[in-house]
Image 1 (cartoon, rainbow, N blue to C red):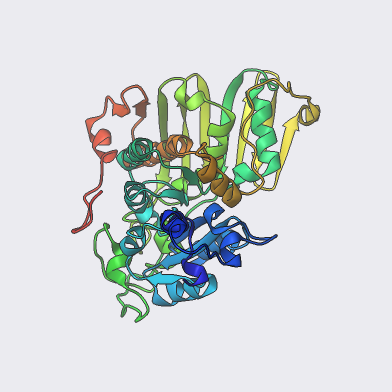
Image 2: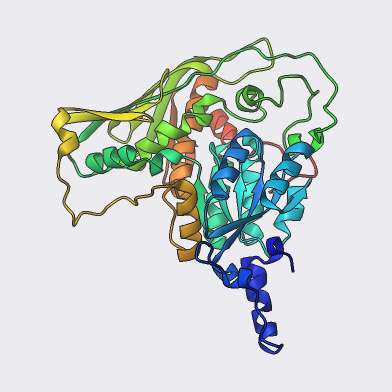
Amino acid sequence: MAKSQLTRRRFLKYASAAAAAPYVITSTALGTADTPPASDRITLGHIGVGGRGMSLLQGFLTLKDCQCVAAADAYASRRDNAAKMMNGQAYADFRELLARDDIDAVVVATPDHWHVPVAVLAARSGKDAYVEKPLGVTIAEDLLCGQVFTEKKRIFQYGTQQRSMQHCHLGCELVRAGKIGEVKRIEVIAPDGGAGGSTTEAPVPADLNFDMWTGPAPMNPYTPDRCKPNGTYWIYDYSIGYLGGWGAHPLDIMVWGSDADVAGNIVVEGTGVIPKEGLYDTVYNWNIKGQLGNVEFTFLPGGDSTKFIGTEGWIEVRRNGIDAQPASLLQTALDPNRIQLLQSARQDQNFIDSIKSRKPAVSPLEHAVRSDVISLLCDIAVRTGRKITWDWKQEAIVGDAEAAKMAQMRPMREPWKI
């Protein structure tokens, strides 16, 4: 059996049979000083190995206690290149990868509209999943994803890597420990989207299976910008734009640092620009305000930060640093007996550790759903031009039938369904 084929599940599967045969085990199976034995290595399949997916793959390849064995992508060159890097198998159809019983977990870095469908199918096939943000294209997708992973008892890791940054952990710990007093206001800022994109139909590249790339989304003509990064993020068929695609990061920090969003109803309203020309049609230049329970909430485009404002000071967490007023807050000693947030030095290693321990990862699905629901509510508020109220007890938009329909599952192109 080739080294790349001796995976954790297969090792365990054949262990009992090997007991009846002559006792011969290779040094590779037993592991080395630098590599754990096959029985201790988590096997991974990578679904979506473009820019972000390739970056994740390169990270997982450096971990000693996992083994990347398969890659799936709608682009032949991407999946072939990834398979070569890992000495594994390439798949044009990710469902063939999911059918392998020797793969423990998957890493999902597809275009946004594929995140939940792939994750749900992975969980139903008995696999844990690391899923890039944002989560779903509708609130109903988010809730379904949470339901399936709970029922199947699968580990989920969200691609909000700021949770594995020490300063982000510190900021959220200080807020939860009450060091700024009672939280009164939370201000979130995320990078803005934009307009444009070519609408001129062009031949589909020979390298691309455009039907598979489109998947459950409506089929539209291929254009030069449709499958490029901005296209996958800023076209409403595939995403709600940077409200969710980048907003996921600072909104996730908000959820990590405070439970204001589940302390009562969420109420949001606001304005934004929806392009009328060009390929891109997601909201940009938004201005959102509202309430998270009793806490005021604002969400604006610009940088990348989450600012918690309390009765005794404020703490602002950014991707590249942390500030506070008074500055001495950052030196405050924390009670060692408090309930502590999980610490992680690496998002990928934490995922592998969670698979082994069967304990929640640092970015669990419950929190992914909470932050994603907020961004989707903001999108609905802008598109309807009305104040939107979300009731967590009912898991529904209340008082607005039209808006409630926008929270439901979008129609899925045949033959796709979840």
